[in-house]
Length: 271
Image 1 (cartoon, rainbow, N blue to C red):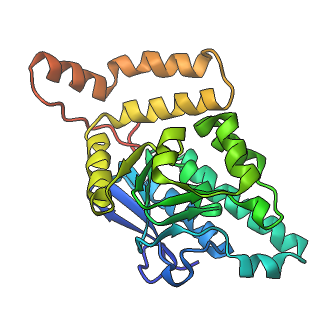
Image 2 (tube, rainbow, N blue to C red; image 1 turned 135 degrees about the vertical axis):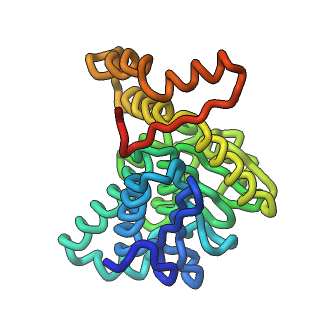
């Protein structure tokens, strides 16, 4: 697989300060997701998650007309008769989505235009979703005779509830940004011309906070989503160990000195 930072690729990563970006870059196909693209999304998430300077990961499109129109149906037709390739495709989709949901760092979907099928599947696995006015959202397996995976369905249910999930899945309908916000499918609806700036401002704010705290909070939330209902030894240790950590010492000192804290903990330095 080619360099993940190659901007000519259909999926590439870039880093600007503390913000890492994963760019879907197949505008002529409205970012229809091929097997290679699914694989590169996971590769890009892992690369940015491991980058010491990156604190927040943003998933976006190089073309405001479409975040992603979904799976590449021409490729799906080709692999339909090949069980091995079908399984490889399933695993690649799952790996891409889970990499976003379970990255150590916060992930944000920056959505404009069409966000449909597999594209919506990518977005709902991010921690946050910003949708531009004019964006359209849909999960449409019923329109082509497919079945939505259980993991994806659970992710959708966790966001929008049973009734809204059934409404989307049973009808294959598209919802606009206003309805998406009302049902909880997106967290923020913004003017199209303000989307990039609003996402960047939000990302920079998170990047200014304690990364030790965000790391621990994200791990705790994921445990709850996975079904854990009470503390275990690991979660108790995470809570207790934070008190004498480098960020907690700095945060308390800065509060007492009435100044802005300068947090120094990073993913690559967990002491």
